[in-house]
Image (cartoon, rainbow, N blue to C red; front, top):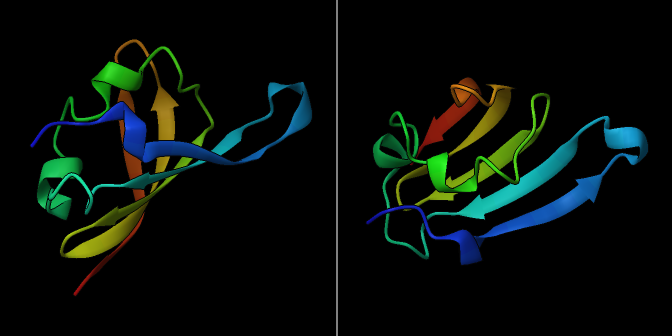
Length: 84
């Protein structure tokens, strides 16, 4: 499946636009981690995400912690990954 905005939620927000900690539950969208980590998956949310934000991802087969490096173009850096 594709990215679904309803599964992206804010966990914590640092004042002064320092960064936002997001959670995305891809397992509700039935997406494996490989799909979530693919280029362009989070593109529909590029107007919500900012450089420096972190995204914690739960997928059907694992989890990952992502860092938003840039928005134009959207560039994610995988910090950690766990497959189950």
